Length: 338
Image: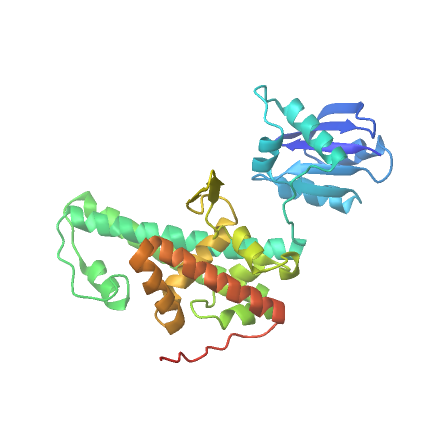
């Protein structure tokens, strides 16, 4: 059996191949082309195993090896570094370390969905990125107006229909007026791009039943439901709701020693997309879900609002697990006051 370690980069991939006895069979720097991958596999025994670390451009090489019949796994780079930390780090050593960890079964794997699911994730992430850029542009326009002490009208939305009419008629001195017009034109471009991305992403995920289950949950809607459904994937890969909450990065750290227990924050671990979705959904659900509001107020009195909203987000995560596991929509139960 051959084990292939791939240290993938944008322009090339460092390859290390070992056999079942941990002997190095091949080391090379391979260009990122289909022909180069086919040539590599032609020099090895049938059905090798391969591993590549998750990174900005892992998708191409993962799909290429998979289409050529190679069983390839995606490794978590943070956990690989914890297992095989070294002061001397090179592409050659990284590829060889991956191959050796694969041989002994110590690769910390990252869940990889099918190609269609990954494409749908990209569509929704593109939509989220466009919205964030649009928000940054709106904030920049506000700062631009504040610089010239512009008195704004009493409007609920400065960038709504009435607000846009006010901004279009506004005259600023010198080049500042042209800067404002450029920013407003760019804002229109972003708005159109967001609409197109939203329509494309919704059409791509309209057939997924799990989106409907999550959409029934308070705080979720046309955006959060499909994003959460795609990021969670097959819910059966989580043995219980606690494991899903940990995957979402909603479980605080615990350190216990000598009879003393310290509970820290959630930290950067977990799927940051799911963490963002559940926390934002929790803030929205506080307005329409009385039981969640009671939970938030109770925890806020003791621990503060930041800890309270994470606890509410975890509660929503546990409910979402039940909905996906039981394949049903959410039903709000009335509160009974004693």
